Structure formats: C-alpha cells, structure tokens
Image 1 (cartoon, helix red, strand yellow):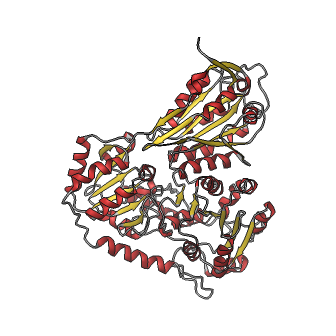
Image 2 (image 1 turned 90 degrees about the vertical axis):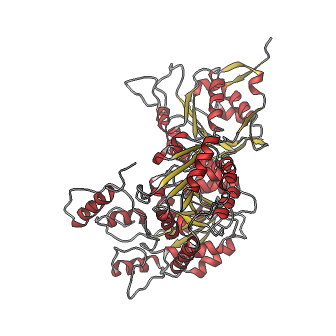
Image 3 (image 1 turned 180 degrees about the horizontal axis):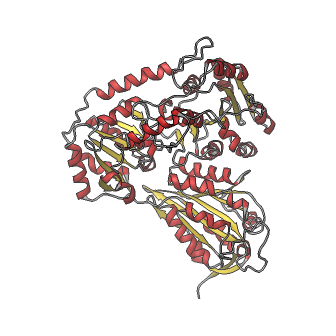
Length: 639
C-alpha cells in the first residue's frame, strides 16, 4: 500500500520547499533560502500556521510592503546568480496586488522568484469576502489574475491535491535557465487549511540539475567562421554571461584575439573594469569608448543579452548595412534577434567550444581599444572635478536651468556639489568588494558610465524594468546573498526613496546592515531632463510647494526616526568622513547628500533614445524635437 502523510495544503507546501535542491557543475545546495511574508487574512491561518509549526531550514523575514519584500527576493536571486531563491507570501486582495510590480521586475530581468499570493475562497460560499473584487463577467476572476501577464508560470490551487502538479511544474520553470522568471501559485484561503493524504515520496529530496546547454558542431563552426571572417568584432556581454559564470572564458578569448568587451546593464561586472579590453557599458547610458568600438564593429557577438533599447540606443547604435550579428543565448527567442547567426547554448559552454576554433585569429583593432579606454579615463577624470560655479554656470553636463535657478537650488539645498563629483568620490571611497545597487532615475546612467567595479559581481543595476523603489528593498536582498565582509550600498534618488523605502525597517529589525546613499536634488531629475530636452517646460518634475518654493526634506531625520545611523552631506570631505565612519557601524546607515540638479552625466556618441514626442504643439522646441526624431527613425527601421 502506498504510504501517505496527512497534511494541510499549506503544510505540504512548506515541507516540499524544504526538499528542493539545485546542482550546478556538481555543486549541490538548497534552492529555497526562505520566505518573506506579510501576514493578513488569507495567509496567516494557513501558511502562517504551517511556518509556526515547522519552517524547516527556511529563513523567515517579515516584510513591511509586499512590493518591497518581493523586490528583496528578486534581488537575492539575482545576486545569487539565480542559484537560490526566496518565496514570498501575502494576504488576499490588496496585499497580493502590491506584488504585481515586483513580478514584472522579475519577469523583465529573467529572475526566479516564487510568489504565493492568498486568494479568495475556492468554495465561493462566503463570497464576496473582505478585499475581494467582483468581476461581473466571471466569478472565477480575482485580483490574482493580474499576475498572469507578469508571470512565467501561473497557477491556482483550488484543491489540496492540485498542489503536487503545480509545484512540480513551478520548480521546473524556476530552475530552467531559458525559462527562469517569476512563478505565481495562488492559494485560496480555504484550500490552504484543507487536508489531504499526500504520498510520502512527494516530499523526497529533489535535486534540480542545471545542465549547461552545449551548442551543436554546426553552430560552433558557423560562429567561428563568422568571427574569423570579421575585421573588428565586439563582444556584447549580457546578463547571461554573469549567470553562466563565463568571466574566465570572456577574458581568454578577448585577450588572445584582441576582441573588445562592452557591457549591458545586467552584464556589467561579469569581467572587472581593470581588464584592458573591457571598454565599459554601451548604448544610451554607455561610455564613449564602448559606443565608438561598437560603431566601428563589423560583427556584434551578443552573449546572453536581450538587446533592449538602452543597449541598442533604440537600434541606432549599429550600421545594419555593414554590421552582422552573432548571438549566443540559451533562449531561441533572444538568439534570433537582429536576424543573427544563432548559437543556442550556455555562455560559458559556448565560449569553451569556440575557443579552439579561433586559433591564429586576431582582430584588426590593434591599439584602438587601449586608446579608447585612455580617452574615456580622461573624460571620467574631468567629470570628477565638475563643481558648481555661482558666478558663471557653464553646464558642462546638462543645461536648461538658468544661472538664477541654479543659484537658488544651491542656496536652498545648501550645496555646491555636482552629482558626478559625489558619485566618483563614492566609487573611490568604498571598499573594492562592496556591492552597489540601483535601478531608476539618472543614477543608472552614472553607474553604467562611471562606476568602476574591480571585483566581479559587485555591480547590481536593475534596468530590465528600471523600477523605482527597487533600490532599498533590493539592497536588503543583496545583503542576504552577499558575503559577511561585503558592504552593500543602495544608490537612490530622492524620488525613488519617496516611492518605497520601508524595507529599511526590515533591515534594521533583523540586523541586516545596508547603506543608503541618497542623492537629493529635490526632484525627478532624469524625467525633467527628458521633458526639457524635447522642448517642454519644467512641469511636475521638480519637488516644489504650492507657492513654487523648492522643497527641502531632511531625509536623515526620517532614517534616524527608524533607528538607522544617518549623515548629512554637503561637501566631499563630509562624504569621505561619513563613508569611513559608516564602515564601523553595525546597523544600517543613510547618507542624505544634497546635490544640484542638471549635474548628472549626459549621453555620448551613439546614445539616442526613441521616445514619443508630440507632432502637434504650440512650442517650437517640441516640434523641432519631433522632426529630429522622425529623421533618426528612418535609419532604425530595419529590425
């Protein structure tokens, strides 16, 4: 007779999570690290009860906002190179809906996370219950149907026995490099507490083997032929390279054949910045050196990249008449982009297969990569010394604001600091193995261009979704994944801080130290630039009061109120002293740094961005911007 064990659906779920392991290159480890939760009706009496009885090895953290804790789970999985995950449990209705944004973030970045939103009653007998929406078109539709558009796999467990097939399918997706992304398992609150005689073997230890997809001989030989037939190939290092652990192979091939490396937002810090052929980030937020190399190239070797618009400069960075594409990716969909020659395979395994086929090949780049890198270092050094001039504001980085407006900001914020000089001083002051986290606003541009990571996997920029509010929550997830001796810094603008910062409280509650570097320019500077660059007025993007006064917020007091150590920073010396002191602290810190607007980096050659501009307007600047956009688009319509 088959042996069974009687458990509730929630108990069976927790027992199953404890038995999931992952094996990569022979190294085996538990796959589910723990569960973030906010208890409410719908999960406190089901999953909450099961966790109270026996959580097993799962680490439990009580979040403060459903989106925030889910973002922390996403960041944890990303920093762990997708080899460990957290599950996230919420209550029904608005608690569940709060997670939808984080699900979108995970999907856009191909990051595995297990989302467990509570749902309304499977029996429907007490419907409509508290926090239940009613759709007149179908009683089967609940808030959780919103997750379908932002989940790699979605299911609803309405009977206890359905849990088995749902979880087996879920973990196939979570551990599949091609399909990795958010999995949503909706749990009706009555089903969570219902019991079933589960087969004991369902709870046996399960090892999910992540085998490296090896390309075919035809693919490798075709790729080698393309490379050897090119004069100036460039390798575009995507996030797939980082997750694959392809650092050594990238360095070997680049060095031996003099092929420059340029990086996507997700790929940056796969190879450290000190490698001579690493020219840095490319695209809209790219360095001049990377963009120039790409524009010279006759073959783009895209490895593990999705080719987002910021990577391709809205498809204007390449000369499609002169440049071919070779794409290496575990996903056929991604490998097919730009009508490329496709190599379907793991980045590390593919490069290992290519290496012996490229003997005696050297690109015609010669000393160009070294020259481009030197040129960029000079520009980077210049940006480190851009300081505000009260008498004659010559905007070396961004324009649009008058001398009078800039003087007013300087007076009100009590600072002459530019964003770039603070940014570069910070890069110099933090430990080399420190991990930096960011996501939205103007800071990603400064990060992609200016931040020099000298240790692999210390750069964590969420730019697949560029989700405001990810930064601080994400830094908590990174903290949980980082080594004990690594400091974690969340680089965040005042706009993103106001959007979502409550997981700072979670970090303080559990003694997980994070450092928040808050750049306060009293507004949404990135969008203000977009607005004014395209002929518009500054409207709705500055933090001004009802009577048009620049707002001044003491963010340090906010952090101190939560119990963090806080610093006010108005000079570079104050910044350096604060960084030094913060390293000695055991608890989380916040740096309230006042910087002037319009002092972030601007775009370099090849950094055009396609955005919608009004074709009918009373402003000549808007019409001019619209005409300019249409002219550029004519050259970007091929793919």
